[in-house]
Length: 217
Image (cartoon, rainbow, N blue to C red; front, side):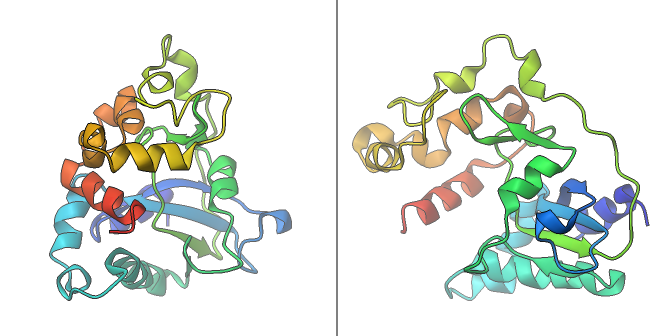
């Protein structure tokens, strides 16, 4: 099994490999894990797959989480892998630390993770813990280093996401819920401003779905 082969299998299910690394004991991966693979939506294909799923259509809570568990189990079983999920806890798996350990994710100027392919639209639906040690690509420099005037730094209309400060969640939510925040409800302007995000193909319907979940609607 190669990482590219695993990525191809994941994409058939609506997911994609968004980073991988060889964990040590300090990484708190499941025991005997030789390769930990981070999985995120395969855009824009993912949204069509998810919205046709029984989890989305049954009207019950946590549709995306339930879909993620089913699909990840289908991917993991023939590989003798174990699925790990960011919403199972406490204790919660350290997905942010895992992302930084991988070859594909870095911190952006506004503190959000940036992915080499997804940009600021990076999200993780699961991690796959494998007992096989896969060959992995070498880690490169962050794409943010070649962004001369990072648009993410000034994209937030209320400055909730800006360099050298913590994310101001109350300010963000208040703006989104106001009449002035209509554009943000279709997707965070900071995430959308990233040059890599612009090429990623994430649909506005999906961003709006996540924004409703963020607001608890």
